[in-house]
Image 1: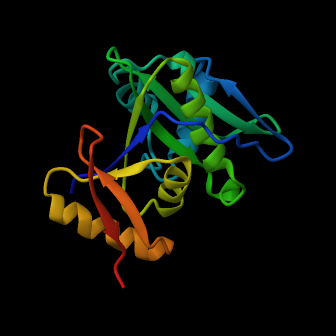
Image 2 (image 1 turned 90 degrees about the vertical axis):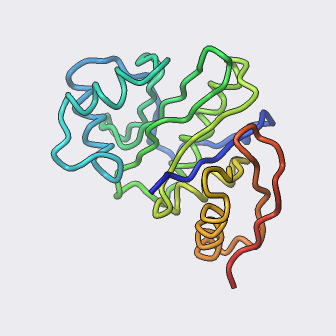
Length: 193
């Protein structure tokens, strides 16, 4: 099944602060950082037995990704969350591999991750930012919507709309503006009753 797509059009990025005791830093590419990144992403994005090869496939081999802009959120020196903003040659941004360890969810870390990525992409002059996600990643989707991302209806538009109405029902969102792959307004989606 195709992933859900979302699009953000340049707008003010809402400031989000990390909880006390949490810091953000750039990834260094060391084996220790790769191990930390793997531990974080094994909580919903990669399998529990993911290896350095999985890191290379997901990150190093990803088009236009600069490992210097993988961001790690730490608590007491341990990596707990990560996000990677990517600037493509056409100045279109992409938010890649957003993950947070389960023990740290519900603290606003997801909103902070998105804010970090969007601030970076705005500074890089991106007018539009895309991301993909899975239907079951409901807290992440809520963070994306809060930041201003809109659903993209693509491929089988009717199927995508049905999937979005189910997500909206669970998140108790009544309506959402939906766009096409170019970011043009398509329709207002109304949640399933």
